[in-house]
Image 1 (tube, rainbow, N blue to C red):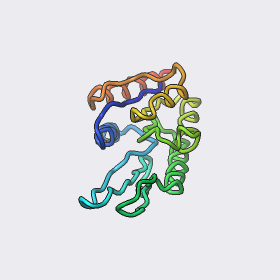
Image 2 (spheres, rainbow, N blue to C red):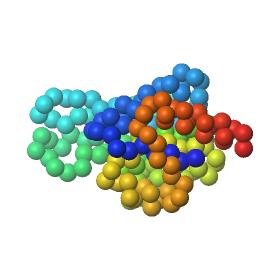
Image 3 (tube, helix red, strand yellow):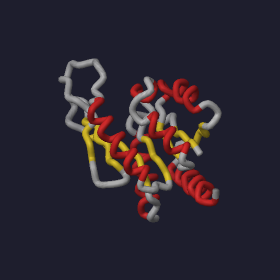
Image 4 (cartoon, rainbow, N blue to C red):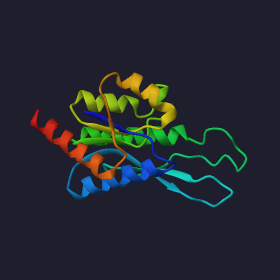
Length: 171
């Protein structure tokens, strides 16, 4: 009930997750979660990171502009927590699947989407998570033996989601 995708280049997993969400929404599947859209701002600055909440129409910026020479984390934790609250509310509305754009540093530290992932699994809702290689060990420790690696292929991931949704509905 917990699948994850990793191993893609910069920004590619975001495109994959967006396409999976688009396909499932087109089929009328009620989704909770968020997918990330990166907005390029030019060659001398870093992109903006926006999360689209799948249970509604909200789009929330989760990046901060720290300047061209900054090396620190650009994540806006308040923006992320706002999205987490919206996603949790969407999950309560009867979502068939939770999509999490990234198991990142906030989740490694026990914050961000980590509680919502547990909430979904406890409610029998399947979860799809994107994980970068740097956080994979922490994700696997969190997931224990529940996590299933998925091929980074849109068709395969979408099929996995459909199968888990059917299993959850049959239970």
